[in-house]
Image (cartoon, rainbow, N blue to C red):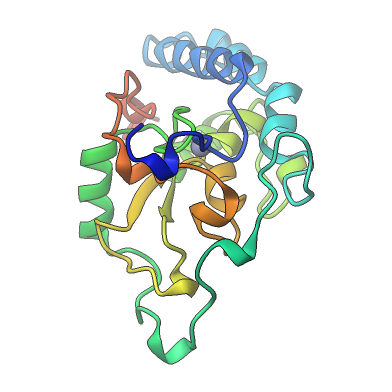
Length: 214
Ligand SMILES: [Zn+2]
């Protein structure tokens, strides 16, 4: 971490717990089993990765201030700006997403946990619907690990505060770090600006080796 402003700031909304990495290890083992044609083993491993502790980390109380969630201090930074002054494009372009992913890898720039593209989750849900449940907009009915590792492209300066949808302002993020920021800036949440530290090399491939499998 660099810069005096961020010397004492935390890196993320909520510190990761070891179970998160255990869940990713299980997903990775499930992926290997699937690729080797061991479908029952894959299904068991995918189901095992659906860990309640991971659900709790990602979703329990994330909208409520609690000991582990950052309590926003709106007075510490910018406010929302008029709509006419916003970047007209909120969602980063495909080219920007590609560049951001190439730079950051399959790892949240805030908390450092693995992330997985929604395409891969959709594929696995289709292959193993019982082991990998998924109901839109209902985290409690989603596979906890795929939900937690859902790859997001986060505007570090919120779009609503005038943040651009470009490579300088967008980083790879997990679901909690993206949704948990709401419309606040990192200063308002007292977390370090992830752009002030280089992306850590990601030992994970986001299970991309499953792409194209059936
Ligand atoms: Zn994160």
